[in-house]
Image (cartoon, rainbow, N blue to C red):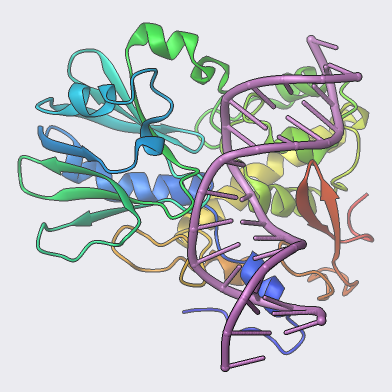
Amino acid sequence: MFRRASPAMTATAARILAGVPELPEVETTRRCIAPALEGRRLVDVDVRRDRMARRNDRPRDVRERLTGRRVGGVGRIGKFIIAEVEGDLRWIMHLGMSGRLQLANPDMPDDVHTNFVATTESGLELRFVDPRTFGFVAVFTPDEWDSSSMRHLGPDALDALPTSRELQDRLAHRTTPIKASLLDQRIVAGIGNIYADEILHRARIGPVRPAGSLSGKEIAALRRAVRPILEDGLRHGGTSLADLAYLLPDGRAGTFVDRLAVYGRTGEPCRNCGTPIERVVVAQRSSHFCPVCQR
DNA sequence: AACGATCCCTGTTGGC
DNA sequence: TGCCAACAGGGATCGT
C-alpha cells in the first residue's frame, strides 16, 4: 500500500511525498461525504478553532448559519468543496495542505486536530481534521460570495477545462513561469504543486518557461496532459503517503504516489529517458522536472 | 496590471 | 540522546 523508500531516496524526499490535497483528493473526498450530507439537516455545528472560520467576516456565522439547516447538493470547483445550504447559502470547505474530512460515529475517538464538526440528523459526524489549519470552512450569502475571492476562481480543471484557445488567451504575454500559472487558481482551478509537475512532464514543457512563450502546439499539449494526469490521480484515490498525508474519509490511503513521474523524485531516473530528475524552486514552490524530456 | 515576496501554521526531519 | 532550526505548501495580501 505504501511506497517503500528506496535506498537512494532521502528521508526528506519521503517527507515531501506526503500528500497535499489537490483536485483528485478533493473530488475523492467530495464523493465520500456527499451521500452522508445531501438532503440531511445539520443538527449541531461545532467550530473548535476560530481560525477555521476566518474567511467569514463574523466567524460565528459559520455555526449560526449552518445549524438547523438542510444541505443540498455537494459540489466542487477546483480544491473547494461547495455545498448548497437551505436559505440560499453556500458552505465552502477547503482542505488547505493538511486537511482531511472524516465521517464518524459520535462514539469514535476524535483526532486532536479535529477543528470543525458538523453532526447530521442521522447522527453521523463530519469531522474536519487539520493540524496546520491552512484549511477553512466558510458560509457565504450570494452577496458575500460575489464580494469574496471566490468570484475570481477559474474554471475547474476537470469539469470545465478551457479550450486551448482560451488558455492561450489567458497566458498570452505573461512572463511568469508556466509552473506558476498552472498553480494560479484564477486561470484554472484545482491544480497544485504535485500535479502541476506531473502535467508539465507529460506535456514535455519545462517549469520555468515564461507562460507567454509557449507555442500553440505546446499549449495544446499542456491542455491534453491535464485530464489524463488528474483522472489517473482520481482513479487511484489521490496522492498519499505517511501519517500526515491525505487520507480518504474512510481511512484508506491513496496510491497515486506510486505513479508519480517527477514529483519528489529528485535524482531518480526519468521514467522516459533515465536522466536524473532535477529540482528547482519556482514561485516559492519546489518543482521537479526532467532536463532532457522537458523543454 | 502583473508579478514576486511574505506570511500563516505545525509535524517531521536533519544537523549538531 | 536531545534540542532546535529548517522545511513543506495554498492562498491572501502587500509592495514594486
